[in-house]
Image (cartoon, rainbow, N blue to C red; front, side):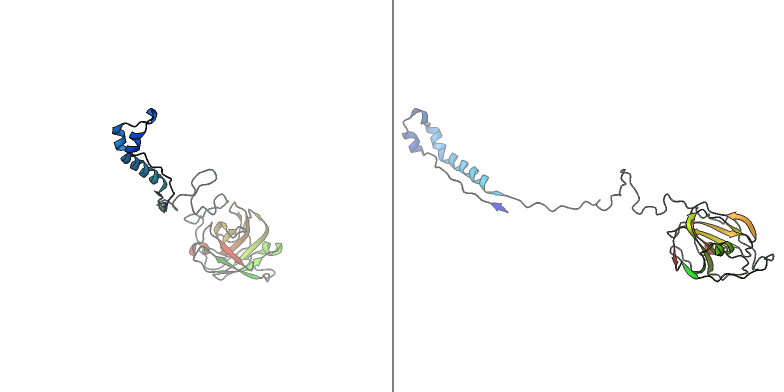
Length: 245
């Protein structure tokens, strides 16, 4: 891009006009007079150069190689992970590398299992989908009311591999369970309202009145056959989806 402007010029006096001047104040020495034409041309070129100047286009900006590789910062200016930690700050009891209790040796119900005095409740069914483990979906009976939760899986002598029971509570709490009159060993998965597994009690023993809890609030408790969670890679901190529950 370039721009131009008009420049009004006035001719410098020639050597003849300079020598003919009679005023002492305007007299031009003969040596200077001989240089007047060259000096005039030089000054004229400078003046025109000031009016006709080149304007260069701005160079394109080269993106910095660091763009997109700067770690995000928190409001305090501390660098943080770009992925974050989904369960940071919440109560979760981690699943140990080995179960705290050994796998049960029973191949069937506890021989001391009492007879069922009334028969099981007829409960609605739902489904639990494990979102972060290569585990099959589990069809569950839904124990929603207090009498259903109090009975649970008492007196059952068997349960299919991908079946279970889920206990639904109105308020999250550190729920405690026992195995009173429960004849098959179980895994207990404690699940928060958003589907996060906050802790697992594995291989709970049969006909045991001890209490089992994970120390973290939960809204649901899922009971499965003992060892099911570990067989399928299910651990605390993973997410599940509850369908029809």
